[in-house]
Amino acid sequence: MARMTGDLGFELHRLTAQLDRAADRILDAALGLSYRRFLTLLLVGELQDPTQRALAEALGTSEPSVSRMTAVLAEAGYLDVTPSPQGGNRRRLSLTPSGKEAVERSRDLLEGRFARIVERSGVPYVDYSQHTRALLGVLAEDAGPAPRRD
View (cartoon, rainbow, N blue to C red):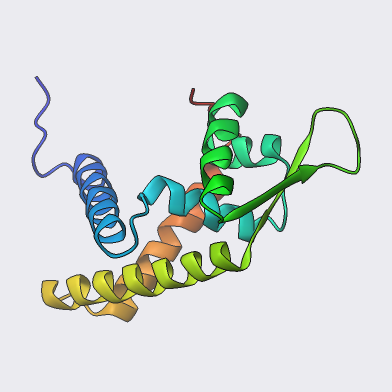
């Protein structure tokens, strides 16, 4: 059996999972919003009014899953879902003012919390940020299309 502890790849997966769970707890306690729903809203804003299909591709999930998620977020007042000008069954997504506010509040809250965690670890925030961006850049260069997750 391969040794798991001390393996950087494994440790990065553990860190990511723990950060995701922490983000979920933080956002739920402060805003009643799950981390997955925050990521959905964040991507709608960053993709600038995507279709549900484009959002599903960006999230690496299925269109039916995105359709359910966007329906919940629209009902909560965070998203507008409108027919796409291209016609057909396509839906265009955009953040409502409440959605934009939720994204900003969530980003500020998570950034503040995670900055304090990094500082408490003794790792300089600027260094950690630079190294993380460098790793993400290399991964983006090496990665092909993301696998679909359903």
